[in-house]
Image (cartoon, rainbow, N blue to C red; front, side):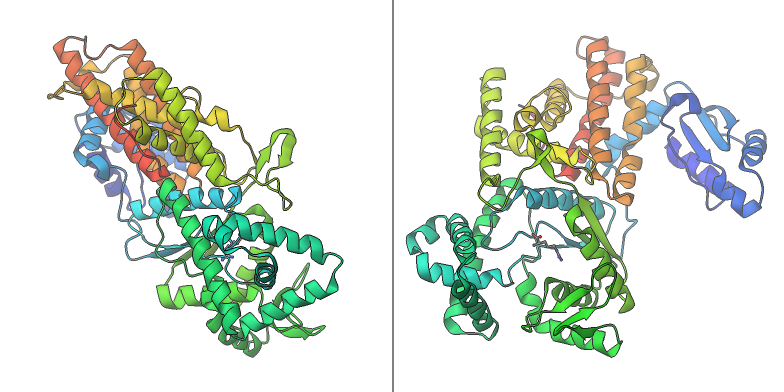
Length: 549
Ligand code: ARG
């Protein structure tokens, strides 16, 4: 194939040389940046490009070679780019875009991580969706990925849940809607304890008992944990997400003391006002409170050690909101002093309700994820009934569309920014939405039903809309690699929107099934390549691609 042949050619010039597909066809169909060579040869890249343009013996599918601003640009003969791009995609199918780049490397992805007995909030949805997309990208590039759901299943609030449940708990309610019931108890506890010192003390006492392994405390604790996890798993099933482990803060407890001892040995920790801390700016990192209970930070440090030793992690990613930035900077810098590298905070912004207000609050006005998903699936079902009343398995498709809408509505935004959210808007079939992408793909698939894609003559693909679509399809592999390198799913999401836009332009400008035989064969191959790219891309985002909708 042409791309490979050209790659071999530039690799002969220099091992460091790379081949790119320029974003704009006026820079050629393929292009080699001369900057890496400039370093090697201690020469100006512009000059290198000019010399190479004269010297290089281009293969016969190349129409011309041109030097421009430090790049060596290759222009292919008519139809040659289309042949190169489309044959590669059609041959590689669902493998198109993958590589073995990460072979032998292990990534531990810490994502989703909701808190036991607390509602699965929008922040946890963001973490789940972003984390899952990164998991897919890493796996796609040959990395081994451990999908870790580090549950928030330890901490002083459990003292409140236990005492609160003993006071006001209702076994029936707990069995029916465990999180709702426990959360109500928690809110009530906080409120009543505001001016009730005894209540505060009882929560502390119960937490202490729990730490010491008291039977009743442990039994209630495990009940709350199991029931919460069951609810979380229901959400994961809807979202189509799976984990390798749900070991959270509780499971790391037996390992914390050893890490604390190591910190002490290295002289990194000290006692400050009865608490054990790592002195740092602007605030010390707390390891143990004055009552001896270990902290979130101590548990994270122990778990980093565990991830390196047990999983042999080369990369450790934490998909957690912006608000924990200082915390992770501190934890990672302490970990580094212990010799543990490869940690990264994959941060993200909040969803804002209208007027720029924070959407979730501690006292009641919480947006529940179940409700959101239920609603979007219902909206999708209404739309499908209106647009395509004859569609078989409407419920299943509505679920895929509703969930896809939520996932895409999240991933299309640069993760570090806050997002203004409009649930109705993301479910529409028009505009820059997930359903629009899914719909474009279904439309492409409908063209392909019951036709055979014959052997195409690629010089037929001359129309501007065809050329543009071919060019954008050819960028897929590069876009996947960029999205992973930058840890930015939105670049891939945006790219897929562009593919859909280009496809829809092509679809309106160039008839496929009504075209004459030669044109038809070429166009069908282009449509097929488009569905392959859209389906592979959607799968990376974690979105289903129904063939009809
Ligand atoms: N459960 C925590 C929360 O909801 C997030 C846990 C993040 N992971 C970690 N290793 N600290 O805020």
